[in-house]
Each structure stands twice: as structure tokens, then as C-alpha cells.
Length: 253
Image 1 (cartoon, rainbow, N blue to C red):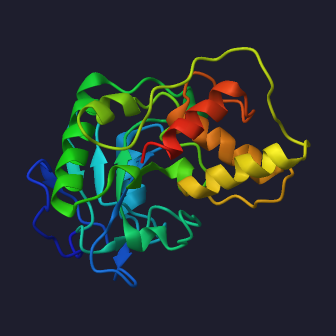
Image 2 (cartoon, rainbow, N blue to C red; image 1 turned 90 degrees about the horizontal axis):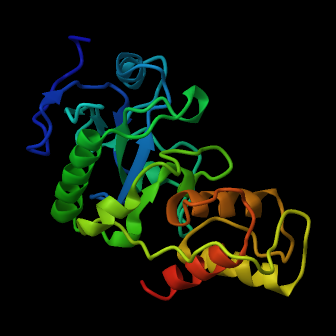
């Protein structure tokens, strides 16, 4: 892809610049205020990087972090990469304009979803720390792809160690409430407690209708919340542990 103009890496941690043609102007903002984490979801890193650089595929991201910890930058941070797709957070729908996207090489749920290697997580943590420090991104604006697109996406998934990033000062997290017996809510139920659940999820930033009915979207949003914040069980059921963890998260910002 020799005809794509190269650029100087924004992060000193990026060992390579593999310029992608797939980007544009940020719309309505000059600087990103969100960091979005993905997994590549393909069987090899080479396939993923080729996909993110292909003009025909019309997708891209700012950074790719390989399993051995090597980091490549594909799109300048000043540009709008095409990584979030149809997505929403805190009332905003153009997440691409608001965010920096990091793709973490991992085949994902469709290909046995292996653990993330320690060297890779060390590199993701260092890169994320560099980005959020330079761009002054708030902890609650460090999100998963599944947070902003819960009906479509699962990445980076429940095996991603958000706690390691949090200990390094990246992202918003609270200790998970242990799973226990007790009342829970699930798909098909309705009532005021479900309306309160939806309102609390919406308060944190998730796009969920406040209808009082535990619909498909509510279930998907609860599952996305669990993948990020209550990773010990991901089932889309709002049990006591999920509700308590969500409450603690909302009251600790």
C-alpha cells in the first residue's frame, strides 16, 4: 500500500506506522475525548491488519497491539478512524469522531476466544496510559466496543483484564459485587424496578430505552455491562450482583 501517505506516530510506543487510507475529518470536535478498545476478531494478525488497511473494507483504527506487545499505528490521532460503526454513548452517536480506537489482536468469541497474553496487556496498558494522559481522557470515557454497540458487538470481551488497566490509572471500575442468591430481572419482565434499572444504565451512558420492560435491547445492554464491569458471569440477567455493581459504578464517578 505504497500510495497511502505515511505520517509520524503520535505515540512513542508505536514501533511501526502502517498507514491506512480509511479515515476522515473529525466531525464537531477537534480532539478525541474517548478511548475505545476492541479485539480484532480474526484468526491472524496479518489478516486483521490487511482488513483495517483495505480501501474496499472501509474500516480502520488508530492502533493495533499484537500478541507479543508490538504496537503499530494505522491512522493519525487527529483523524476520524472508522472503528466504532453504528454506536452510541451518553447521547452521542458519532463515536468515531469522539474516539481513539485500539484494536487488540485476539481471534475473539468466534474462534475460541483465548486469553490475552501478559505482554500484550502490558503494551495495551502503556499505550492507553499514554493516550489518556496526552488527550486528558476521563476514566469513564475509556470504554469497550460492546459498551457503545451492545446489540452488535462483544469485544474486547469478558476475558479482557480491565482491572489491570484500572490499577494503572486507566478507566473507571469498581470492585464486583459477589454473585449471590436473590431477586433478579430478565427478558420479558416489566415493572418499576426495571424502569429504574434502565434509567441507571442510561445515566451511566448506555443507550437503552426507559420503558419498564426488559426488552432485547435491555438484555443486550446488561450483557455488555457485565462484560466490562461484572465479568464473573455474563448472561444478560440483572441479578443482585449486577445491580449492586452498577449502583456502585454510578455513585463513584
